[in-house]
Length: 198
Image 1 (cartoon, rainbow, N blue to C red):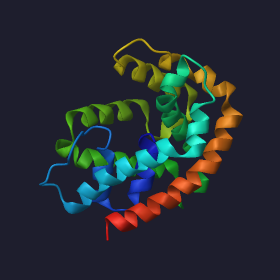
Image 2: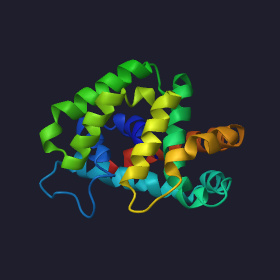
Image 3: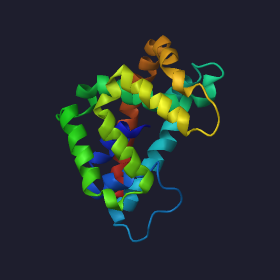
Image 4: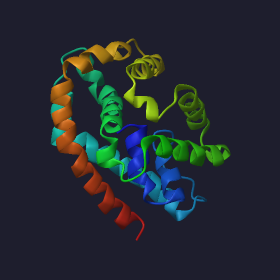
C-alpha cells in the first residue's frame, strides 16, 4: 500500500505506532532498538500490511490486469492508484474525520518528529508539502507528477511515468478489486494493531 493507506491504517495505534509505520518504506532491516516499543510495533505493522496486500487475491488479479511492459511495475503503480481510490471513497473509510483535516494532522505529526526520521523520509515529507499530499492523491495532475517522480527513482528506464492512461483504461476493473480488497485489509489491520500493541 501507499502512504495515505498506511497512514490511515496506523493512525488508530497512536503517535509512536504511526511514526513507526510511516518509516516502513524508508528503513531496511531491524528498527533502532532504542525506539519506543510502540514505534517498533508500527514498523512491524507496516511490513505485515505490505505482505498481506501483496498476497491478496484481489491485488494479484489487479496486477494481472496489466500487460507488459507495465505488468512488471504494476505493484508500484497500483499502490499509488489505490491511494487515489481511497481519497475518492474517504467518507467510507476515513471514519468521521475529513480528508483535509486528516492530511494536515498527519503532516503535522511528521513535521513535529522530522529530526527523528530517516533523511529519505524527510525528503518525501518536503515533497508531500510541496504537492499537497496526501490529500492531493485524488488529483490527476498530482498523480502524474507522482508517477514521473517514481520513474526517476527507478534504476532503469520504465513505463511508470506514463502509467496514468493505462490505469484510467482499467478504472472500472481496478475499482472492483479495490472495493473487494480494502475492507478486508482494514479488518486485518485492526487485528494486527490489537496483537502488536497487546
